[in-house]
Length: 421
Ligand SMILES: *Cc1c(COP(=O)(O)O)cnc(C)c1O
Image 1 (cartoon, rainbow, N blue to C red):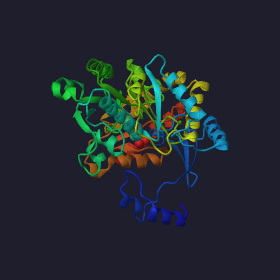
Image 2 (image 1 turned 90 degrees about the vertical axis):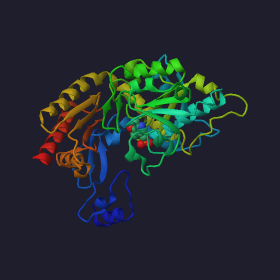
Image 3 (image 1 turned 45 degrees about the vertical axis):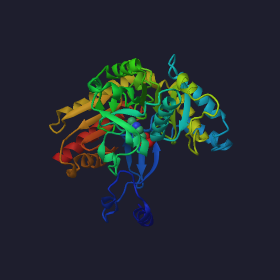
Image 4 (image 1 turned 30 degrees about the horizontal axis):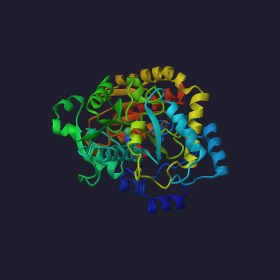
């Protein structure tokens, strides 16, 4: 990196989830990414890497996809952003219709836009709580969440998170939350606790930030039935699993479940621009009708025109390139490749769902940073990814080729061998 940029970086920047002392150390040169094409990213020295975690779980069709780029450019020539408070615009209208059509026959017919995963979750929780408050369910003031859940970093989203380190201050804050370890624990709740539940929130099929931990098959369907029987809202956080990652467009479709709220973000724009959507039912929507009633929530960039255009571009790619039809064959190869790592004695577990994999090498004492070291070693072999502690994450864009998957897994193998060698 040019010296002047390096100095400015270390003097003024502060990065998320990053120990800044090591980052700013004299001998550390941060990787600076300058361009991307397909699944390849290029750094300041012209070195190329495969994007092994889809740029933190966002990218879907590869970088610089011509269809999405063209959609953004065309929108830019009209207008970049206008307010959604008191006005509407065509990209948002078209996107809403297309999102609803992705869930044919489901009850999810209303779309509320926001900016990122955390705000999509905030919307769902606030809608659920306000719904009950103004529709005869005043006692329903609690959200049930699961241990090791991750739903984002804003105050409300973090309050239903179940990973203590992500709570930062460690304070008990935000929404009234009841946390349980797994489905069976629901049976242990008192009737008083159940009566106070406004909603249950879960990452369907797989908990991402917990280290790619899979829920047992059928768990989601059972949870959905449990909620239905008690008229408790089900909020599905598909911020990571949405848009094909698990092999179907949405993870909930794998178990035939329709939630009351579906939260979408990361892959919504194909990973190009920040944008989120919270989808819900007519029932919830109607609970906000009537004189003086409104959902008191919104952001300056709600339904950003550029974001909507990018999302429309991404959905166009899904259709034109028959992305979902090509997925099963890719997933089969991915499954074989990541499981082949089990022959390494350091690999304790490989957890995989669709094009998402967690390769666990631990547990080691956290201060040994083994997971990070493996990812750094893999970088020398042309792979970019980040671990969750001792779990190496591989989550390629859906556009990944067989050869690229092979190279990614090979880089992980070389990285593990190097660190433990
Ligand atoms: C990333 C993530 C979020 C938070 O999304 P942001 O866009 O980072 O706010 C919420 N839930 C899940 C499951 C995620 O993976």
